[in-house]
Image 1 (cartoon, helix red, strand yellow):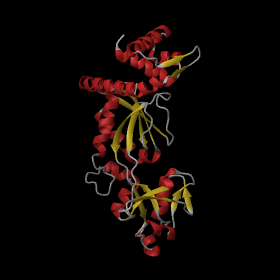
Image 2 (spheres, one colour; image 1 turned 180 degrees about the vertical axis):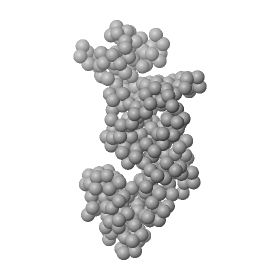
Image 3 (tube, helix red, strand yellow; image 1 turned 180 degrees about the horizontal axis):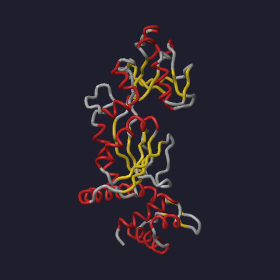
Amino acid sequence: MDLISMMRVFVSVADKGSMASAGRDLNLSPSVMSKNLSALEDRLGARLLTRTTRSVSLTEVGHAYLDRARRIIGDVDEAEAAVSSVTNAPRGHLRITAPSTFSYRHISPHLPIFREMYPDVEVEMIISDNELNLVENNIDLAIRIALMRDSSLISRKLASNPRAMVASPDYLQKKGKPIHPDDLDKHDIISFQLGSPYNEWHFLVDNKPKVFTAKGMLQLNHGDAILRSCINNGGICMLSRFVVGRHIAAGTLVSLLENFLQEDIPIYAVYPSGKHLSPKVRAFLDFLVKTYGSVPYWDEHGNHQSEAAIRASK
């Protein structure tokens, strides 16, 4: 038994919480699963799992070893994929998921280009604002706009995602332009519904963090709805630059308080740590990184915006 195989068994059991379930995923018999775990514990000289007839649980040492084992497996899979991608053309069914606002603007418009490059790859995209379980839903890759905390996933940053505070020129002509975060109390605010984390607006004032909790007379549950209300002179809102960048560049919206803002929740591509990074997934990852660029095209200062992206951002 090689070390990587033993580690894969351990990680699968830890993730599933069951020897039987992990065995089915790995297509290994209970006896082989048990031998791998015992061999790994013997090699390390420590017990990693507490096993009963019905369940397994991690020991303190097991918890510490789990994160390292995941990273090692991920590195091995990456290395193997890098070699296999040289000889194996991307092909097969690629299942991805992404949140709605980003999907409509910055993924679906580019899929025909990706398919033209890789005609043997069939793409299925699940648009969902919920974080779907990748293993349970057999998803190859997910786009997440969040601070990554799930250590069972391998993440690759696709782009920064600063948010911008904006308002329409007509609104600002009527109400005046705020020059300090404290001025927001005098303005009409368009916010997400109460309780949304997106209503926390972060600033740096006199070198100290300041949070403004947005509560608008207009409260909407989708970024596109907020965008349209803002363009139509509804007030001041905070949205990702991948939503408002083009409108700022066109003058439809005006960016506000840029020197105070402290907003960036990066955009990541994520995939399960125990899943081999196939050529089709590798090709799609590389395609997105190249498409978005080091300075994403949706930023108003971008200089390589594609026609598909321009149409999608409208």
